[in-house]
Length: 228
Ligand code: Z5A
Image (cartoon, rainbow, N blue to C red; front, side, top):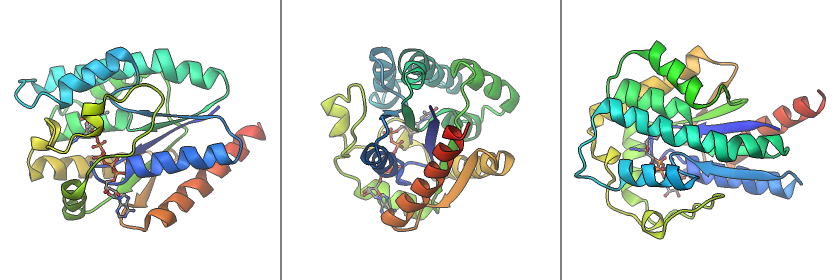
């Protein structure tokens, strides 16, 4: 079926929109599954814990990138490919654009060609049919992060309770503002480079308006798909 992803800086509203899209798809009679990166398989969840929940664990930029990619490779193989093969719509809260933005630009592993081929390899050649980038000014993103409490995240696969209840900044969130500025710019650059895939949406819009815009686009994609 179709594979769609939602991207943006932390706090941009990705989880909210991913959840709403899946609910809407189900209401309209589609079988849909939601994954969050990193995570979604036992290995990917363990990698997530290593990457995010151990603030004092030193992880250099290259191993960080490889760990995110390893988590993704397992998720694609064990969950995403099989779900697509059985006709489901797969919605993923972050995918490889996050690696390009956070590790490529944020962590300044500047070799974008290499990252792009690693991304393709880890994704087993799978390219999202559509990516919605929720763009948010950095100060608004920071404000939302600060007031974030327990996410209502619901995905196929396990979300350990300690992650669902986490309110302290995770390892990634300890990076400074310059890091987040580079990440946001990299997302914008990706959207400019791949306009056929990445739709940039104004993340400051009301939740309902964003959900409507995403649903309209998703419905078009689905219609095109079923027309052959
Ligand atoms: N990472 C990476 O470095 N490389 C990679 O390859 C991958 C990931 C895949 C995952 O963190 C971290 O891993 C992330 C990038 C890195 N780190 N950083 N830093 P995560 O999974 O724990 O969380 P996140 O992906 O960063 O997302 P988030 O912080 O949970 O935020 P969100 O999903 O974008 O937003 P939300 O939870 O839906 O909403 C945040 C708040 O805003 C909440 O209070 C909402 O009620 C509110 N909200 C949502 N929408 C709106 C609108 N439209 N208006 C007003 N308020 C809103």
